[in-house]
Amino acid sequence: MNVALASTDYEQAGELKIGQVGIANLRILTLNVPQLIQEMRDRVARAPKLFGRAALIIDFGGLPHPPDPDTARTLLDGIRDAGVLPVALAYGTRETERLAEQLGLPVLAKFRAQYERIDTPSTTPAPAKTSPASTVSVPPEKAPADTAKKKHSTDSGNISKPGYIQKGSVRSGQQVYAQNSDLTVLSTVGAGAEVIADGSIHVYGGLRGRALAGAQGDTEARIFCLNFLAELVAIAGHYKVLDDIPDTLRGKPVQVWLEQDQIKLAPME
Image (cartoon, rainbow, N blue to C red; front, side, top):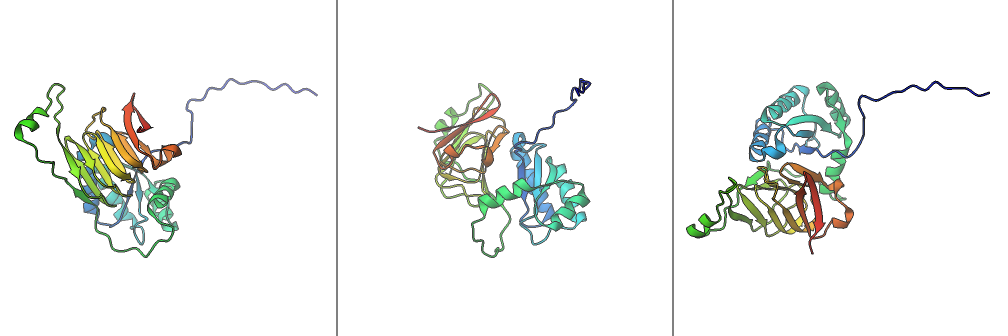
């Protein structure tokens, strides 16, 4: 018996896809709400193209227990006022899941898993007391006044300064920012560390943390490193996370640039 099925034309009003999502992850190490809000306000002020109205995952996994709902709401409201948009909590314990329900936020498992894979060794010692993340301003190398003046360019309205040089390693929790300048790191950028420059970034060691070039919107900025294992790279607000990066480039000398609003990566030869 043949059954004729009536065909119905149906055109979707919206197409839903589940795919790779690159969203910043804020891991709370110390529940100092005013300091956390101020640190986020400072990040937005330094790199508005990257952090302004950016989606943010809040990770309470660095604390013994998640905060109570009132404290968490105060933190979320302050972070929103700072210019960033908290959209979810990172997966943790059942307490975290209950807190997410009370806050009306989803729980995203991917970000916690990625953080642990990058930053936590296979055997983790008992956590030690850590100090809050610090920001290091590296003084520029001294140059004669005439030379410095020649390096200023006003044709396009951009002003460049002699490059900042970080001679030592940038450790986890540290942030180094080169304002109106390139940044050169002569050693490594550790996991959980952050290097930011309004110009380009050169890392002559391993890059395991985050590198944000062109922080004020310079689309010509680039990132260069000799050992590429970055958690995140960004140029002028466009970024890629570790999971987006081909395995063939990991641990290799790599350059990163922006082309037609897309992050491009290639080995350095």
